Image (cartoon, rainbow, N blue to C red; front, top):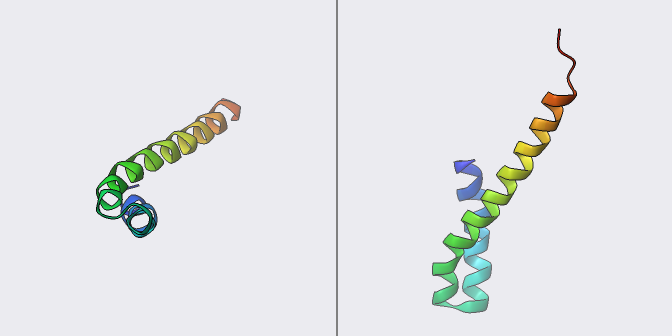
Length: 58
């Protein structure tokens, strides 16, 4: 998740938010990357939990 956050989420967000909001966008891109990573981790966790619950116990 850390590598995903840095390479896939933070760097593109930094460029996009920097272009739209300037210096403040660069600063806030860190927070936005954390929020996106949190939501993505919650989605992955819920999918994994559902898969575990569906699996029959032996």
